[in-house]
Image (cartoon, rainbow, N blue to C red; front, side):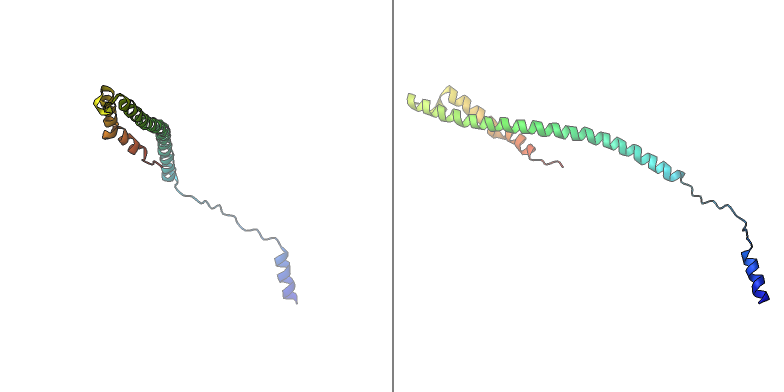
Length: 128
């Protein structure tokens, strides 16, 4: 029993442990350099992409306008041809043989030669 008392008395005493300072260290300079470089390059990329994005928005707007104009031209060509044929018939001549008919045909050939159609095909490019 006496031994037990001695052990309990020893355990009851405060025991202080020696403290040691431990430092946890990593060399993060290279990682910080990579991060800094990446941020700078990403910022430049975003600036360029914003310019490109603005250009695409402008091109889409212009493309829509070109498409509308092209459709109006086709409609007008059809209407003028029908009107020209009607008037020429009343006069007893062929529309294509008149000066107006020849001019209409040149305009129509210009359109049909692909100059305007190429624009319409270009409108089909889908940039995402």
